[in-house]
Image 1 (cartoon, rainbow, N blue to C red):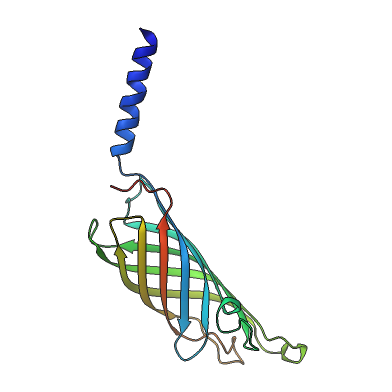
Image 2 (image 1 turned 180 degrees about the horizontal axis):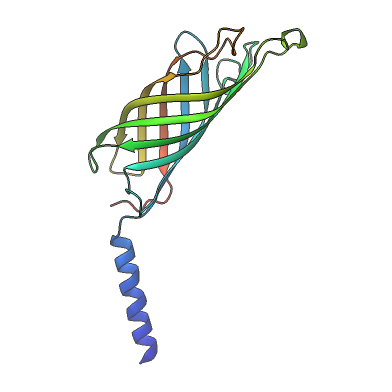
Length: 180
């Protein structure tokens, strides 16, 4: 009899948990391009807690590099971007969801030859972007946005390949798959 009660309690807890809005963990590929410069590709991970504005407030990490873009199999400058972000998504439970995002991070460029070591090649990143997320009824999400880097360079006072305007497309998959 006691085993049946425990089993019933477990079933009730599982049913309640499965109906609750769970956390979101989106993992995917990010394709980014600076306007009039390099294509950079990499990955993005975004997380929304089940307790802190679920499916609205996201925290993320992205890594994009020209090594997987324009510099792949060419002599273009190899550069890396590491970003931490915080995003707010509007229109919960809609297919098309506008969002805004603030990013901070680190940029580095590898010019490939020691003669260029006198040029600035590292910088902090501070940017914002806004766009649309297409949230299908599956765990698949596609987001696109237009962004602006507030810290840029001209080759003398900052890396010359850190351009102000960029756009990006991220295709991600919710690996928790618990959103209702």
